[in-house]
Length: 411
Image (cartoon, rainbow, N blue to C red):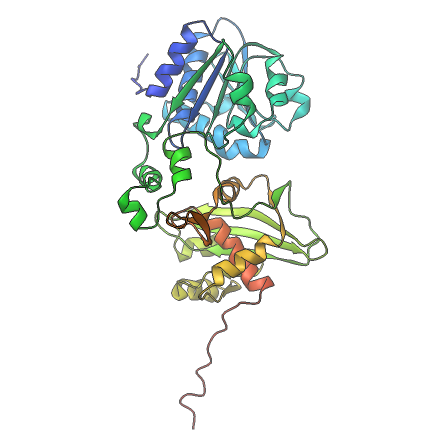
């Protein structure tokens, strides 16, 4: 049998050593963005399954919403299995929960914590709550009281106070581990550069990317709550209702590092509610790719940014109803103000949009020691901008009209 050497991360080594010590039944992995927590835990589960083939075992892998799992931890898990040559489609049952995968003799059940019937009734040998700060203590307790083995919790420390700190980390049988992106030898260069841009160095301050709070959370992995959040009046919904006063798409154009973001938007005037659903978040999309994508989804009017008139024109010439919006001084702040006046409901499967809105903050003026009325520079806002363009066009009427040159050369 051919063997393959696999590079393991420092985070994996700490977790594996703690598990083998036999002293703990809860392992807490706290760390900044891109610190390899998820990848390292998946490495751990692969070895766990490999070494425990004496009987059938069950491991529950969970996150707050079942709809979030598919695009996050389940995809990551399957990607690692494929990379290691361990993935077998015959062992992947996609009809239960978010999926069940049998690795050797261990069944990994991917379940949302909102699947209460299974979460409150299923026994396990071990469980993992990914992004555990989203969960409640009751979610953890329900899983733990039916678990015969151990638990792993991981999270970005985006709260200064949380039940994990008070009720879990202080236990004698809990092993707490902290990591930063410096513990991740596999971090992509662009991700590392983005996180480093938050560090309050003289260079970053001059270029307007420094953000002390984001550096504390995502760079250093320290506990700090995000202040100055722009959107706070929002929540989740399963889907956008069929009956709506207005409905369409908003689009923010990208290409290389910046993704093209497309959001389905709908507005209910009676309740003053704006519904949003992420439909596209991809890099390297040229005009032909965008045209193909729009022709694969239900046709509706598109409100787009106007920075690239050539691209907008190419999409329009393909028979797609696209309208660039009018930008100008103060238009960003004005349209944000309008959106803040609505209740926003985002579909649970909009993973990247939810991540953006949770981290979207105002600019902090270090000299004045206060937040100012403009979004912080350098933050991910592609999908939020797409939604904002739809609001500008459909609800504020800021649609750029084509110029009529027919009379210039007339006699």
